[in-house]
View: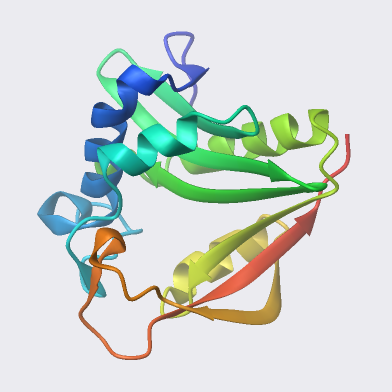
Length: 176
């Protein structure tokens, strides 16, 4: 349950190191295995870095929305507004707090921000091997499009531990 001590905020550039570390811990490595959204068995290496996070925070149409409590970051989501579409990514929740509605609340807040910015739809890319995550997003109204993208061959985004990694694009209409 959400407490009054929890709040949403838009990340600032000086918060990039903390956000990068948080996202990496939520997605990869031993700490991520405490949650159900880990990619540690699929990918090694980092998910992001301070430079990428700083770059994502810079433009006005690009937002990293965060949620925190007294202990620090609870979660993050990246929102990129472009031509009537809100592209969501980097949805991360502190592994020890997963399953408590934090990810859903971040996604709902991101959808609200996108609708207020006149986006007509939201889209995201999800690894096809992550069946439980695909099902989670489908329960939240996101539809699988059948559009796929290969995982980038760039160690800045991770080193595949399995062959054939790719993303499927999911989308959802947004209304103000």
